[in-house]
Amino acid sequence: MTDVESRRRINEAITSIRRLMSSRRLDALHMERSGVPMSLVAIGVLHRIIDYGPIRPTELAERADIQPAALSRQIRILEEGGYTIRVADPDDGRVALLEAAERGREAYRLFVAANDEMLARQLAGWTADDLNDLADRMQRLVADLRGPLEDD
Image (cartoon, rainbow, N blue to C red; front, side):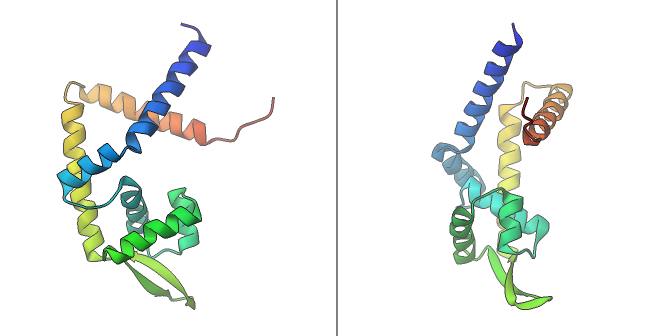
């Protein structure tokens, strides 16, 4: 197989993964298994708030790699569901920071447990070495794809 053919296969696999990860069917399955009524996008935003919070919405947009309009919608969903709260910025009282509420932390824990169980079942035929190799290669792929594109 040529390099061109290999790159096409990689691109097709990336496209398939992107479609799968953004499917309503997968959202519904995660909601059913975890008992958490949130989309994968909302869970991703909540994850960043847990990891980096309290956090300004502008920094959250960068860390979550999401457009501000889409982020505003997700923040509203998280706040209305009681998963996040706003707190005053200790350095600038005019600014509100986002922080995960206890309900948000528990929802994220439930989601992660359900996701781990689903992945374990789906990848049951893979050895630990296979999984580690795939994880390493995927991390390398992501790092390379995030790198700068240089003009030839």
